[in-house]
Image (cartoon, rainbow over all chains, first blue to last red; front, side, top):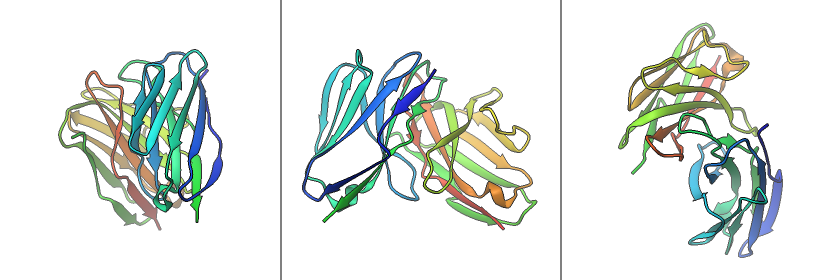
Length: 111
Length: 115
């Protein structure tokens, strides 16, 4: 079956670093995505990993270990505007199959 | 690049009426589009997958006669909520996938309120 797990909620302090973990079990694997979704808005793309390792993009980095079925999103120098839900999603098939989404991690950044 | 638009961004309608939501890929051809629904503080729920020129594939529990999907061109898919009821009030989001790509680009969403 398809299963993607991520923590429901996290809280972190402005200026700090936070790591949001995601574990997945899917029938196939063609890449893992992270999206950011602010309340009342649609998700926006953050990162895509298909090979093992760390992908860095500014304050955000994403890591993937295919053998462990594990990924994390790392947010550095947290800002208040980073308060949002972060969605982990896996592409498990062909281009016609939808991404399998986790339920999202709601991150609250506090002063 | 990879911009997806939705229209309208919000709509209020009376119970029993039908509402059409458009999803357009503005700068790429989308062979596949997906329709999601999201209730407040809940996760995205996939409703259906639509491929250009063919019938949509609906997820279990989604009424295909109530949520009509048309993907007539490589840049446009429409979702029509027929005979809407208050329980259909939700945030409807489409996403589009380009040919030979695994990434899904999301539209900004349409907030539907049925009174």
